[in-house]
Amino acid sequence: MRFRTLTSAAIVAAALVLVPAAPAGAHPPAFPTTLDLPVGFRPEGIAIGPGPFAYFGSLADGRILRVNLATGDSRVVSDPLVPARPSVGLKSDQRSRLYVAGGNAGTGRVVDIRSGKVLTEYQFATGTVGERGYWQINPVNGALSTYGALGNAHAAVVMSGNGANWSPWTTFTSGAYAGRC
Image (cartoon, rainbow, N blue to C red; front, side):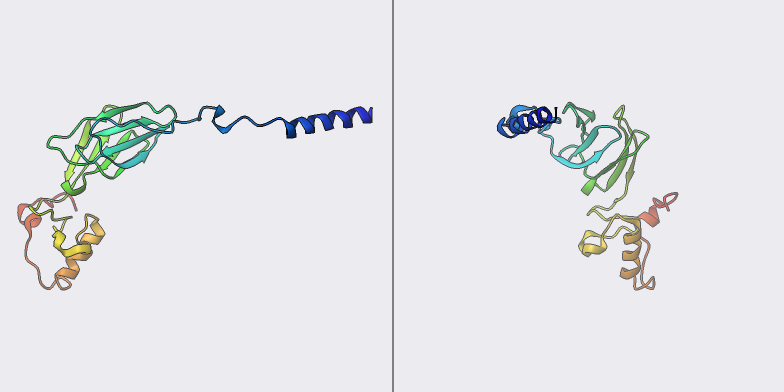
């Protein structure tokens, strides 16, 4: 009996060594290897989830594309913006909302990813040359010009000589800051 068990084990081991493995391409990939984009779509920014979905923003016109990462199926969930402005940074949450940064348009918006409806939109930069943030820091100020609230406040302090040298700016004089700080 022991001889028969060893012989069977030897035959199985030899078969495993001698039988060639199936080529790597013999099995279809478990997930798509390419994703199709709509014509004219310039992808920038990506958010993953909830579920097996990825959301891509378009630099060209602000469209939002939803892609099922398991099947590769896709559809535009938010149509082009009028006027056109980009969709660059994206972040999704568990309540089916997508937070979208508007890049050089100086905007941010919240999109319902089920309906594609823009729930709200914010204008962060209101100046004619792309001033940024609550303190409207002009882009000519390099790294000091930022949309981030903390960085923008720091820039205002630095540029005003620690608050000693400043005059009211557009956001202040127009009252646009009210309810946002």
